[in-house]
Amino acid sequence: MRAFVVNQYKGPLQEADVPEPLVGDGDVLVQVQAAGLNQLDEKIRAGEFKQILPYKLPLILGNDLAGTVIRIGAKVRGFKPGDEVYARADTDRIGTFAERIAVAEADLALKPTSISIQEAGSLPLVALTAWQALVERGNVQPGQKVLIHGGAGGVGSIAIQLAKHLGATVATTASASNADFVRKLGADTVIDYRTQDFEQLLTGYDLVLDSLGGKNLAKSLRVLAPGGKAIGIAGPPDPAFAREAGLNAVLRLAITGLSSGIRRQAKKLGVSYEFLFMRASGEQLRRIATLVDDGVLRPVAGKLFPFGQTPQALQALAKGGIRGKVVVSNT
Image (cartoon, rainbow, N blue to C red; front, side, top):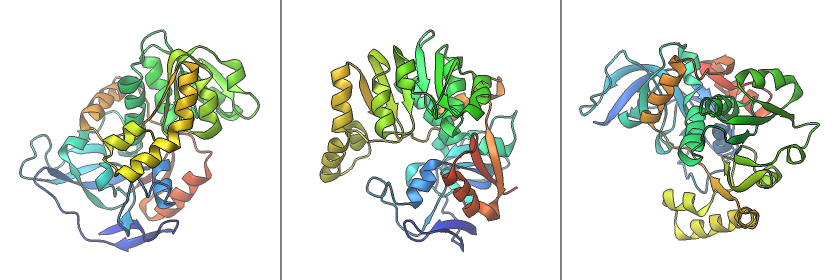
């Protein structure tokens, strides 16, 4: 089976022949027809998460997939061969930059019927991130004010649409060239991050979804209303994440230290900070598929590459400047 693997951290993505996936009783074997690329893929390749995601090398990269069911395990009841499906592979079982992958039934959902397989492949990780940030963690209610950083990116372009659906007033940061694009997605206020300082222009927000970290996250705390919440997907990880991930005591201590500064700042301001490392969920993807088919959410597959050009696709993602998602197609 053909796949694209990383043989060493910071090394190039290379094509290789790899063994066929093992299909357990609760697994579904999927022919991968489209795989969305995410910043997480590049961070894993660069070794940025090797302490908290200790993958064994060589590693097949890739978190998102859409494709067709080939075979099901003995205990699978919800899918059959021929079904068109989509998923974010579980953190322990990534590897969608391959011709086939075995996915746990609980992580899989039927793809939305109203969109192409490539558009479906663009959705899982970013849509689940938006859902878990805005619905699960943020509990966004009608009339609340939400700031979404990087509105033209993969997560941002879906989060804007979902926040509007939930009834929020939405502000976002984007370049001037993307201002009309993010307004069409539903943004009420657009801040040009190159020429404007969002901290000087926004105040009283209930929730911030931050995809940049660092100084951007610190400034985001200061636009929140008392009791507001900043959810960071770029870090730093917090103690709750370390506990949920089952990390050892040394790593838990290190992670507590990493986020202590930002958590202290948040406490002083009467707001809170949480780190979100999204998880796979077929149940949530079923709800997202309904929103897509109802016309509430529209995927943004900004650039398409053939499967054989997966390394070039990852390089294009790393360079930035692409609206929505980069997707590799193997139909």
